[in-house]
Length: 255
Image (cartoon, rainbow, N blue to C red; front, side):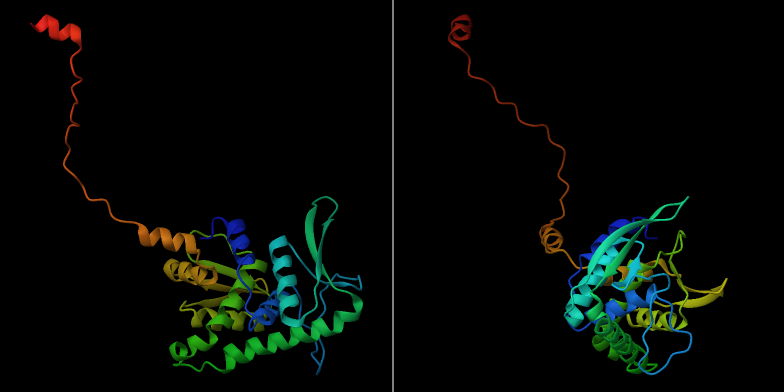
């Protein structure tokens, strides 16, 4: 499952942003790489561990996740971040893509991300009661898509041959992902291992349908599929041979 994760993430990053769910997607991206505060207080916001620069908002392992987060923040709260790439590590070097915003806008952006996180909870965990998934899917479908698009951009799936598995450290994020998958028609189960929550979509068909819901449909591919006509088998016939008209020499010899 998800054999070409790089291509998938490029398509997810290039997906159009929805004005209503841009802040939700940014909040889930942020929460995926940010530890929640140990003692939440009213009005408190989380800050990424390990970032000491005043203009650093958060960081991602991939450029696709960082660019998508910056675009979603710009669409959702009107502040335009920028992304820088840094090489970190001593023996094992790796790239980190840091999303930065000017210090004066830090508080406004973090407050907007907290609002987006609350909206995601309200949209999925509060407004879709048990037994009303189908009736609520029209309203919560875009939110569920934004949640799963952010998860696949920021979280590397566990390698396995069938289904889809994600490791998540945040229990609240895990609950949100379970409900979002349910809205998108995928059955899930969770388990704990080494302090992590593992979200599993075991049915390959449901996993593929879930991923397809996140990707934009390409108009060119739709037109090609509409114009495709099945080829009818025809009996094998030998092509006709066209005789060349005899030249003057052949006519004289025949006489």
